[in-house]
Amino acid sequence: MLAEQATDCLLDYLYGEPKALVEDSAVFLLEIRKIWQQHGVDESAIWQELSERIDLSSDLLKRGIRARKGGRYRSTKLP
Image: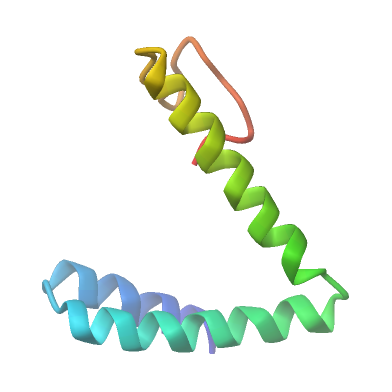
């Protein structure tokens, strides 16, 4: 089910359908939350990880550093 929802999101994006993307993204998030719960993953830890990645990327941009995969600045925290 998760792969199907991810595919739907990708197709919505590729076809430029923002309303459908919002709807399908919501379903995707519900499905992934089920997986997190099944594996005992604390949802707040996921959102904290995302927040840290965004903060790091913002800090680098403020300093004029454009972080990119394979670039000079490497981190598992980059989005």
